[in-house]
Length: 178
Image 1 (spheres, rainbow, N blue to C red):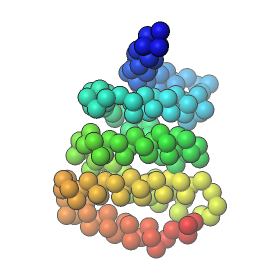
Image 2: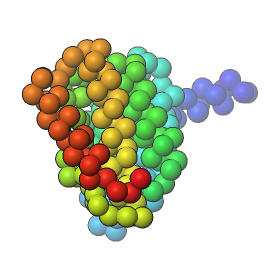
Image 3: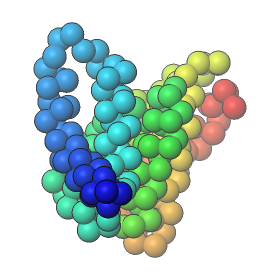
């Protein structure tokens, strides 16, 4: 009985992972559901947890098929005030994808470019005591992980590294909510 329950649970998690892009599409087209609403954030948490529970091979397949959608949603919620979503789901999965080498070099390069912008690293910079600090902090953490991988795999051009160095310097000079 325990084995059947375990197998059913694993089967259900796998199905939910692969149906997530469909769920996301329905939510995006449902005018009654706010973007980033609780229902969607709860589903994102569940899917991320399921992806974390997949084997490395299953996760690689999932990321090949749905990685762009999942990473987009992770970025959209990178600074969520919900610490379970932000820390234990999004950041945990991102780091797992990095250390298990499951992000393509092009994807990592795109993430560096996207994260080092006003929408992430500089989002709400100069403000005090608001939730924008989570977006900036986690953008910086993601960038640190991506740079660590670059040290081992060298996927960024020298120009991109210099631009990122300049952005990081600006960030450190401008950040006030520490």
